[in-house]
Length: 160
Ligand SMILES: C[S@@+](CC[C@H](N)C(=O)[O-])C[C@H]1O[C@@H](n2cnc3c(N)ncnc32)[C@H](O)[C@@H]1O
Image 1 (cartoon, rainbow, N blue to C red):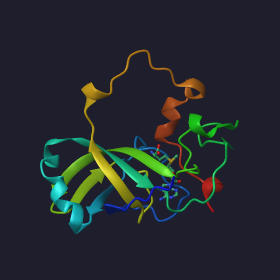
Image 2: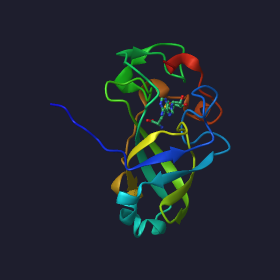
Image 3: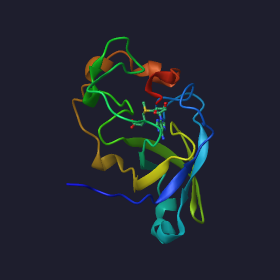
Image 4: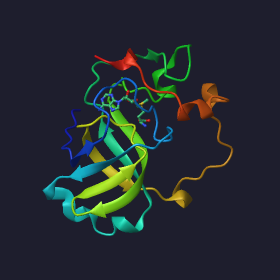
């Protein structure tokens, strides 16, 4: 089965190089930018201004191919791809929880970007804590490494 997606917009971010950028939205100095929603989809932004955070779902357009084992940014040992957030995936889809600063016409101003400038946006969904607040969460090989995500920057490893 083939699936085709049409981008709903584009990401405007300060990052034009895959290296030396945040590896997750919780990076220090939450980077600001905007999600530009294309006119055909702009009407769907009605009521979004009441929410503080959104999930941005997007296409990692600057990676090619995928690997079943990857060396993630937060370890020096390889892990199975699906136990990581590495961008080189069979379906290269990214997921970032962003803070909404303002909804201004067809633009959503956001903070917390770990997304490259020019990235095609596939969908946005409001973040609702009571929908996703599981108990007894385990984080596998990332145990004890969670705080490094704030300061760790990307490097060249997933470049084409
Ligand atoms: C580790 S991924 C995590 C992205 C997202 N928060 C997730 O969990 O799906 C973040 C890294 O992906 C890379 N990246 C961001 N946008 C990209 C794009 N459009 N194409 C390829 N790589 C991208 C950058 O190197 C960035 O540091």
